[in-house]
Length: 121
Image 1 (cartoon, rainbow, N blue to C red):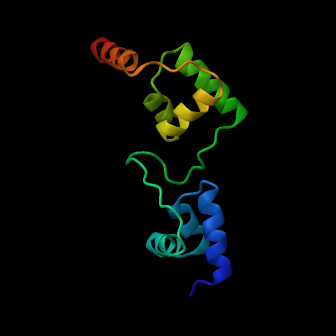
Image 2 (image 1 turned 180 degrees about the vertical axis):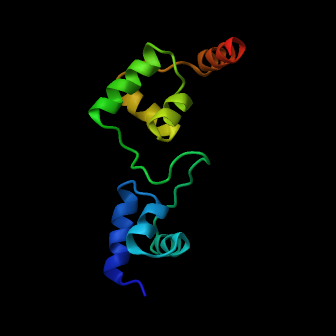
């Protein structure tokens, strides 16, 4: 039985960026139970792309942000490649780079870079 206090804590953790899987493990309940309570209490459920860790908070430390900027600007990695390296969602990488003032590549530039990397491999 899940108490109201536990549900409020689940909602707080979820809004802070923790995954449903992580919250379920913390409370010793199933992910579907966490989902049910979040949904029942009006939390907007986030969907993640397969292949990215669900247990990570979508925040970057100062060191990770510096590394991300370097990988994006100097090494010319894509946000997807950086996401895989740091075990973060690419949308998190994109948002943190944008907030840091990094000029983002246009979709056509990103596509050309991806094609060039595929040909080189």
